[in-house]
Length: 254
Ligand SMILES: Nc1ncnc2c1ncn2[C@@H]1O[C@H](COP(=O)(O)OP(=O)(O)O)[C@@H](O)[C@H]1O
Ligand SMILES: [Mg+2]
Figure (cartoon, rainbow, N blue to C red):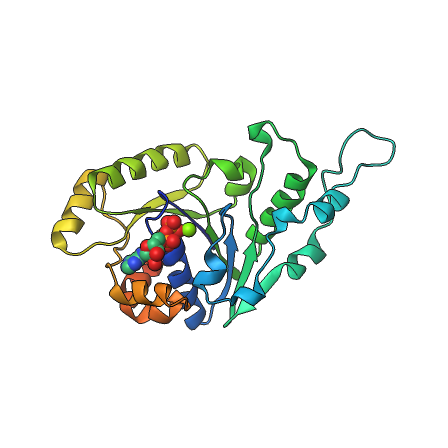
C-alpha cells in the first residue's frame, strides 16, 4: 500500500503522515516514510535529533551524476541506473519507522532532463513497488512536481483540508489537478476540525465527507514547540488515525 498526501502549505500534511506512520508501526506494519517536500520536515516530526541530520538525496549531486553517468560513446545518459544499494544507504530508522528524504526533485516536465532526477525517480519507483511495506509519501502542495511516472505508483492520495472557505477552495483545486495524475483513489482528510458543524461544512462544501477528521490538539502544538517527536502525541488523535486507516483499507478492497 502506497499513500501520498497533499494539501495547502501548513494544513497539517506532515503531522498527519507522522501520526499515520506511528499508528501503522504500532499495528506491526513495516512503515517507510518518504519525505518528498523540497523543504523536508518529517525527520523532525518523527523525532530525529538535529545531529542525526539527514542530507536529502537530491543534494548528493556527485553521487547522482555518477550513477546516471553517460553511456560509453553515446550522448545519452543511462536511463536504467543501478539504485538498489542506494535504497538502503539512504534510509534512516527511528523507533521502527523508516525514513528517506528526497529533497527537491527536478522533473523533466519543468524542462530539466537532469540525469540526477532520473536516478531519484528510479529509486522512488522501486520503493513504491515494495509489496510488504506501507509507503507514506509526504509532499508539498501538489502532485505535479513528482511527475506522472512516479506518482502513478501511488494507490491513494489524501488531500488535507481545514474547515474554511479558502481551505476548501484549495482542496478542490488540488483534487482537480490530482485527477489527471492517474492515482486510483483520491480522498479528503479534515484537519483542525472542532465539531459537527465543521464536519457538516466540509462534507457539504467538498461534495463528500472526508475519510476522517483530525481535531485541533493542544498536545500536538506543545510537543512540536518543545522540539519533540509529535508522534508522542498520537494518543490525542489516535481515533482519527485509526478511522483514516480503516477507511483507506475499506476503499482499497472495493
Ligand atoms: N491537528 C493539529 N493540532 C494541532 N496542531 C497541528 C495539527 N495539525 C498540524 N498542526 C501544527 O500546524 C503546523 C503545520 O503543520 P504541518 O504538518 O507541518 O503542515 P504541512 O506539512 O501541511 O505544511 C505545525 O506546527 C503543526 O504542529
Ligand atoms: Mg509538511
